[in-house]
Image (tube, rainbow, N blue to C red):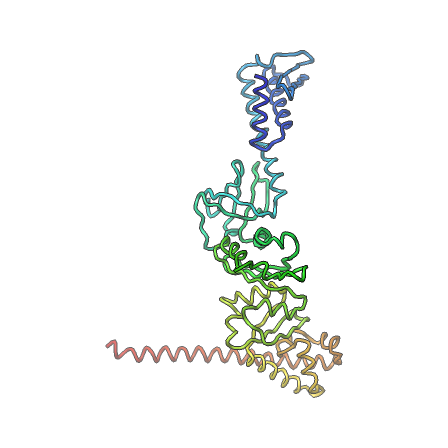
Length: 413
């Protein structure tokens, strides 16, 4: 009987990943509760000891040994309830300790069901994870029993329950997948410097190599795209652009906007803005579907990126030049200085203000203020023109609609 107790403790410890000593202590406390229940003694000195090797149980009340087997059914039921509660608490602690250490890792599990949009994933025979709707990739539906990989995002204790929060949308999920698929990243030969993601649609990853002989982009793509293909399949077809990191902001922005080709880039450090000029045939590629390409490139590089065609760029420069030349004290070289500062339109000059013109370009404060004031007035004129053009476009569209309806009326009659 006593050896059977030891075997039971061994099985519980192995099955629930609980320390055996904790289970023996829980048993001793449960038996103490049973003795108190039997004798109705709250203050009595009750001691229960279980031999860890033989399972022999010895109980004392007020230093007198008692036979714990003769306590009866009700004390036994008390011991059982206390034991269940304590083992559940130990199991919660074990699960919490295990998964809090694994936070940020990728794990795999089996889909169980959906509950109000939340996906329940079985991570082991004793643990379930919760993936809120916001952490699921848009457009993906998972069937019960399907194996999926996900990121352990957070571990919380809520209402005597361990809640393991999972994610497939977090940027770190992509990083961990690359570490699993690309040995050079796991070995820290290649580093993912920065990553920008719109889950379910597109991700841009900037990578750098610490070994000149290792091509970071080629290593991440793999032979015939084998490595990147595995990651894309795991993400349900999400597009992944791998770009080469560069400490030069201009080169990095050029790489980040690929597959579009930039013909010119002007950086305004005062505004944190990059103006990128692309040819007409590259405009849609640079902007991307719903602005996705330029938006991800901006997040990847940390620059606010404006995309312009050569015609738009030249018009902005021309208007800036006319505005500057209208100020009496300004000379022709001032326009070139402003362009070198990254100011390529009157709107930029309005945003920058007079102080950078004084500190960076050495312009007298009075002249700097006059230039900004002139830019403010020109910006108002541009806004008025834009508003008028919009009104004219609306009127023209209305006229075209009326004309079409009039032409169709006789046919309907």
